[in-house]
Amino acid sequence: MTATLIDQVGLVHGMDDETYHADPVPGGSLSSTFARLLTKHVPAKAKAERDNRKPTKSMNLGKAAHRLALGAGPRIIVWEHDGRTSAGKAERAAAAADLATEAAVAVTPAERDQIEGMAEALLAHPEVADILTTAQPEVSGFWQDGTVWCRSRYDLLADDAAFDYKTCQDATRRGFSRTMASYGYHQQADFYQRGLQAFGHPARHKALRFICQETTAPYLVQIHTPDLIALEVARDLNDRAVQLYGQCTSTGVWPGYEELHAEPVSLPAFYFYDIEDVLPDQWRPLENDMVI
Image 1: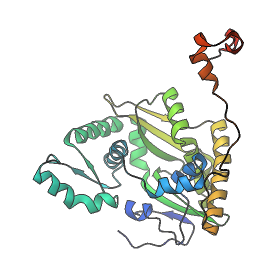
Image 2: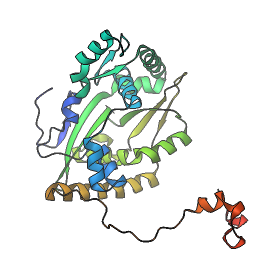
Image 3: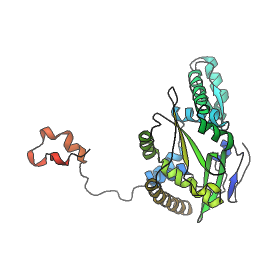
Image 4: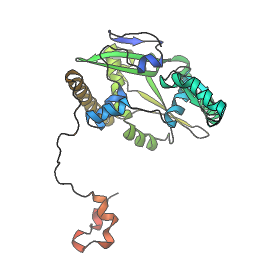
């Protein structure tokens, strides 16, 4: 891992994954991922989730696809032996350190074939192939929002646009809408744009574009951008995240739930529709209220 400390605003080319994810800013910095956690959970829970993050099979596949598609990122290890055998256990033990520091990502032979097919389909997409040829991969950025240091890692950064590569189950517009809401991609777009604005980059006036690729054959590709309303919502959420991060890091206190006893809790509306056949008439939902 490269011994790097960041204390100046700017873009950094060639920084390895280990250094970036270890956070090279003295005192720490806010990433898009942690900003999303801070607006999803109370600070104590967000911090615990960040500190105890374990790579999932889906995350590993995505990282491996990044490596083949972008030509940058952690190296790929293909398991040659069953992990239950002596050879397999030795193979995994030898790679444990690199896997723990995110210097490498491991896949099975079947997953290797899958990501090779994805990379081939990606390069066959004319617009994406042009982006991959002209944009710089894995560019790290560091800036300050008030007193808070922030960091971002652009999958692909061109002269006039920034891109993020996402693997997914459904690359359609509707599919991206659902995953954007689930994973906060609109927040990531706003967060990354803040960095570009701080750097004075030519792409600062354009929203981050997401190159979405399905993980099942024929590995279809679509490019999506959050709309203006999504970005406005994201701006407010990220403002809140920066504020919370600044407060928590300056005080050293990551609060949990504010009150031990909350107000009385009502049943959700869908519950009454689910049990309407056994409800007394006064509790039955009106037919004209059933809006889907």
